[in-house]
Image 1 (tube, helix red, strand yellow):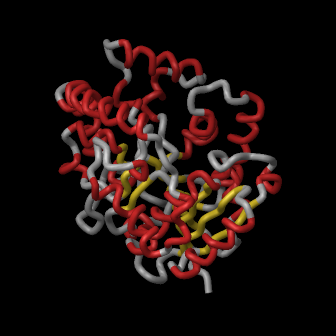
Image 2 (tube, rainbow, N blue to C red):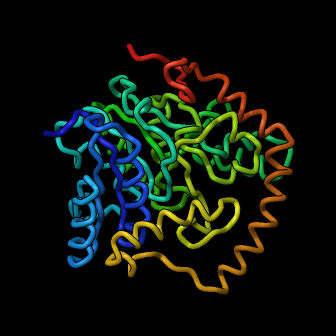
Length: 328
């Protein structure tokens, strides 16, 4: 028997193994009977589907192969727009999570929060903490938001779409409007899937704590202890499955090795990186660590992050969780 809530992922063959790791962690960090866990995988070969379906069954995860033709040819990045149509009717609420994440804390407070009809929870995107600002980066972000048609007084509301806690009722309307915008605009914007969701859904978004969608580079911002991340989002490159690189450590790489040790048939599906790229990234990450510490930990960006967190009205029952509006 299905629950009334689920945790869901949309992915493709290239990201399937990392997505599986996140889904396994989500299963372990959510109480039995609270939510089901589903992975929708687009356009994978039949043999790959069979292997991952077997592993998912063993891990109490539902694996759903999907032909992109059934969602108007959209790719995995855009498949979240169709979740209102893809998910079984039993699910009234869902938690969408990107596959380049790791779950390190209990998800139950987020899963149990009754999102109002027609609305969803999302964190502010890191770009909103860098703009407006006097530096070139801040000015470029402000100009980018303006190019999307977002007025200056609303640019701080731009949200990240890597983790979305959604009331099913109303998501199809938001998703299909975003899909219409994507088809009309093409991929001209920098973050096409995220941009169209912001344009279509900004008025319906409720801010939530960064503990549920923590950009991994913020480890260098000196805010980790204050936010206590439960979902870590590995934005950018390299990714933790590529190796033990800053800003994370070996503990972030080990879950991918652990699942292969448990299911050796998954080994061919671990995304690899050449030694030359690894060397370059190791060098770059040491430089970035210093730069991000200077630009995030010791100036107004850190203050904006903490101010955002302080503005969220959490309760003692939901540590690290806050929203700026209560459900009706």
